[in-house]
Length: 92
Image (cartoon, one colour):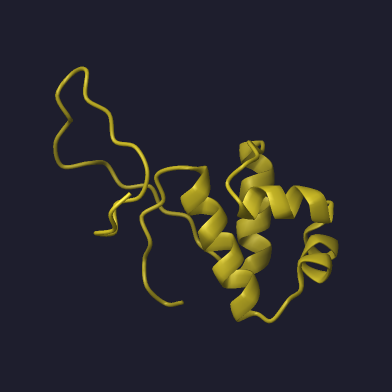
């Protein structure tokens, strides 16, 4: 999992967390214990169904060994347009 992933929504964040957890061979129960959160919260977060405080997200990413980078976009989208979902060449 050494590649960069562009996360644009909760679903993408959940996919990233699930991928790293499984790469580390943690069960949801073990990962939740390590992260200091409930298993239910982890399940909902991995499924993209739960909003979580940003400081909690940072703590989870740090514990799983995931670095977070923010990069300014090269250009701004036109007013009234929105980017939704994933941007990895996948169809919705």
